[in-house]
Length: 160
Image 1 (cartoon, one colour):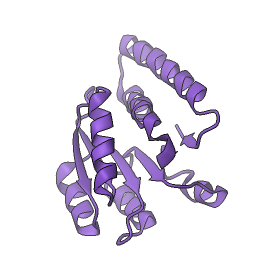
Image 2 (spheres, helix red, strand yellow):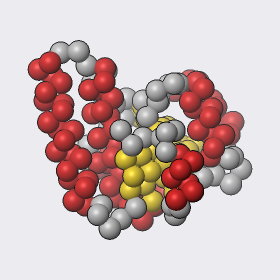
Image 3 (tube, one colour):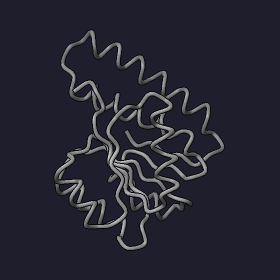
Image 4 (cartoon, one colour):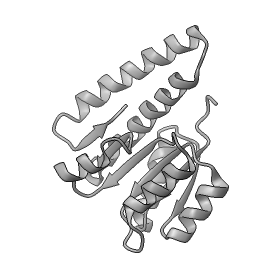
């Protein structure tokens, strides 16, 4: 359970898929990353791939709210990071209790840190040994502090 093995990315832009995958690998996230850009591929990957984290972006052929509902119906506690070009108060209200984080495309350099924070939070919730929990909790607090320093003027939202 300690290793982040599978990430599912719903993104229709091939260049954004390539950028995100490359950035994750360059920064030490060596999970298998499956990319999809249609509802059919998304459903297939959700059932066969069993992702640890889900990265959702808008795709023109598939409503992102439906993508959220489907993911939540299959996996009750799957961590979801919502990627968007812009964020509004209405969008935040809609997504507030349905995702763990939201990031705008102009802040994608913070995606690695968000994934690390969310994965450490998953580990903390599932880990039973006090020693490991203390180490993970210290790392999580350190990452939260780093993110707060970097995103004061950017559009990133974390809901842990």
